[in-house]
Length: 284
Image 1 (cartoon, helix red, strand yellow):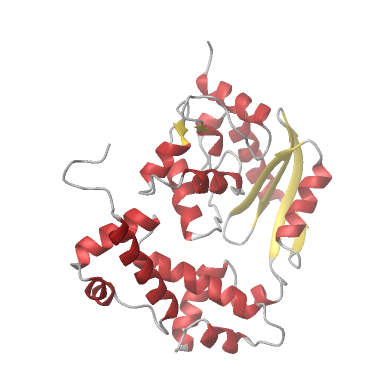
Image 2 (image 1 turned 90 degrees about the vertical axis):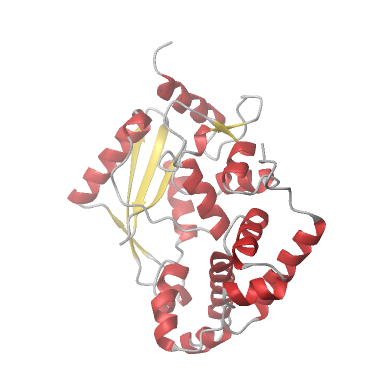
């Protein structure tokens, strides 16, 4: 329940935030919080709180996400160079571009433009009590954990995500990672002490961060997650972010249920979702 001292955003508030979003999108460089707040006729603190309440992210995160989209679109243009894409996305200094681009794209910009070429993704296919299991890692950490019935289908999905990356079989070190992931699937409550390479939009990142805060043996509704990230009206968007989760169990979207406690869809099958929740609930 919203505290009485914090009234629900009005239509006028929504219009102010929408105007701020357009201002961010049209600016050559991201406007400062002070500039955005002044244009909205609000204090920086009030504007920041209102913007986050209505969008689910801070103005800075919104600007970063918009710049990432612009950069990806520019890199996809035929014949565009990395420098062309940098300026098209609003970077007016190469040093600032290269300091930000890797985080925005998940890989160096030239590599992204080449469809992930030269990226090395180690992977392994195996079996667990929930069926086929695919685990993959980039240089940053685990980038895919997938469950299914058909190992070949899981591998094709990985290839579709990284169409020009070099997919190589796991080495001895990776086999230890694989064993830890298998242990997590079999006993989700043990957690996972491995680095994750989590790639998604600013909104998806907020949802996935909230999911990771749900303790084993507990569940939360889509509405509760939406409220937790400051977007109580974005229940459907939260469900879509759960469906886009690339890291089964490590990002525990299986712990999200309908408001009445019943199970809804799960990217890797409702039967697997039910089994994971039963394992976390323990005996009885």
